[in-house]
Length: 102
Image (cartoon, rainbow, N blue to C red; front, side):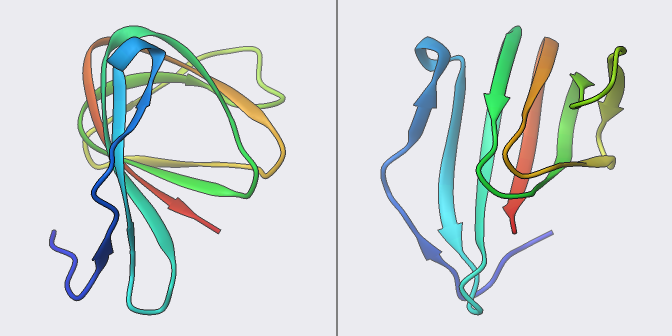
């Protein structure tokens, strides 16, 4: 898939000692998105607003708020995370993703 006519922020978002990186861009309607990459590791993220995570490559195990179990998401799958919450991610190989912010 391609995005057209976007505004890209050049500086990378770097987390967890460089094991997670992303680039922010804005759609023509102003919607903010990030394209990111995670190396193997265990991570916990917090949200300000609702987020939609689409897995573009690799696999991630995700424990969403209110759940006791990790669920596997791989290429072509997606999940939503509520606003003002946190979620856990485990990556064994790598995960390539797109995050849309509501």
